[in-house]
Image 1 (tube, one colour):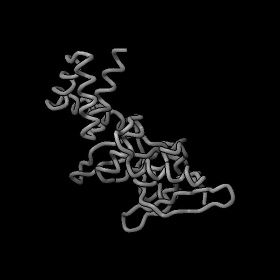
Image 2 (spheres, rainbow, N blue to C red):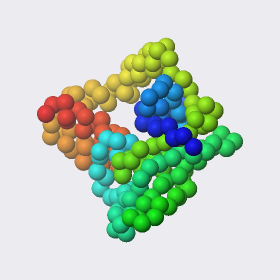
Image 3 (cartoon, helix red, strand yellow):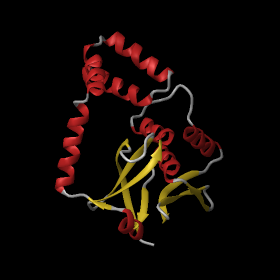
Length: 198
C-alpha cells in the first residue's frame, strides 16, 4: 500500500451533526482534504495538544503516552487504514525496540495519541479517492468568508471584546478558571490574547 502523508488543517464544529466536530486532514503534497466527523471529547483532546495547553489532570491520551513511555514503547505512525459504510478505521503502529505492533483504533483517538508522540499521519489512495474533497481556490475563499462571518457573530465578538478589554491580571484569572473548568478551547483563546500582549 502506498502511504499518503496527511497533516491536520483544522477542527471546527460540524454543520451536519450537532455536538460533533469536523477534523480536516490535508494531503501533504496535494490539494485533497479528508474530513472526519469526531466527538466533542476527542476534538478537545486534539485541540489542547495542538494548542499546547497543559490540563490540570492528564487526559486519557496523555495517560496512554505516559504508560507507553513507562513500558519503553513508542508510536511510529498513525494510519487511516480503511473506510467501510462511511466509517473510518485507523491503526496505531507501535515499536518496543524489538518488534512492531499494530493496534486498531478510531481515527480520532489515533490522531489524539499520534500528535502527542509527534508522529506522521498517513492514509492510502483508495480512501482519499473515495472520501477526499479536492480544494479549489473558490473553496478557500468561501472558507475565509465563513471565518469572517463567524467572527462577526455576537457571541464570538463579545468574548473577543471581553478579552481585549481585560487587564493582564483579569486574563490570568480567566485562564486559571477556564483550565479549572477544563474549557480548553476558551483557555486557548485567552492564552492567545495574553501572548499578543507579551
